[in-house]
Image (cartoon, rainbow, N blue to C red):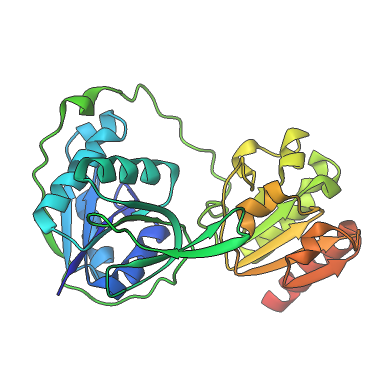
Length: 320
C-alpha cells in the first residue's frame, strides 16, 4: 500500500493535536509514515503508533534545536527520499508552511496550503480549501510531483487506529544553509491554562462591544467554563484591550474550531477571514443588523453584559 509522509509537531516528545489529525487524514490516502525531529523525538512513537503510523522516523541531532527551519527541511527531504510517499502532510502553522514550501521547491512539486479536508482521488489527493476570506470553497490537486499539503488544525477528528509504529532512526545530511540562522535564546510562553488558540476545539472571542480591557474577564470566564481558548477582534487588540497573540482575523490568527462564540464583534471581513471555517458559529450582539449575523448558525440579539454571564452560569450549572 502507498505510504504518506506526515511531519510531526511535538514539544519534547509530547505530540500536538494537529499531528494526530493529520494521521487521520493520511489514512485516507495510504499508510502513514511519521517523521519526528528534535529533542524527545523518540518518545513520540507510542502515541503515533496508536493513531495509525506504521513507521516512525526519528532524528534528534542538535541542529534541530540550535538553528531555524532549514535543518527540519533537510530532515523532511531525507525522509521523502527514503519513503517515496504519495503525499507529504505538514501541520499548517507558520513554521509548517515555511517547511512545506521549502520542501516543495527542492523536490519540484506543487504545494497546497491551509487545506481543511483531504480525500483520495484517481489522480492524487484532492484538497478542500477556503478562499477569499472563506467566501468560496475550492477543491484542488497538485498536477506536478508529489503533493506537499499543509492542513489547518481542527480539520479532522482524532481517531485512534493502532499501527505498528516501528521506530527507525533517520540519518540526515545537513545542507550548508542549515546553520545560517542560529537560535540565540528562548522565552517560555506564559501559561494561561487555556488551549492554544489555533488548536482549540472551542474559541470565545470578544470585540469592540466588550468596551474595555477590564471587561474581557467576562469573555475569559465563559471560555474557562467551556474549556475554550480566548480570541479577540482587531478592534479590541488595537485598543490595547487584549494581546495581539490572541487576535483572530486576516492580520491575526486563523482558527477553525468546532464552536466559535463571537461576543460584541460586528463581523467585518477582516475578522471573518480568520474564523469563517468554524464548524458552528454563535454571535452575541445588541445590533440586530450587525454583519456577523449573516454568517452565524445561531445568533443572540442582546447586551453581552447580560447574555454572557447568564450563559457562563448555565454552562457551569449543567457541568454540575
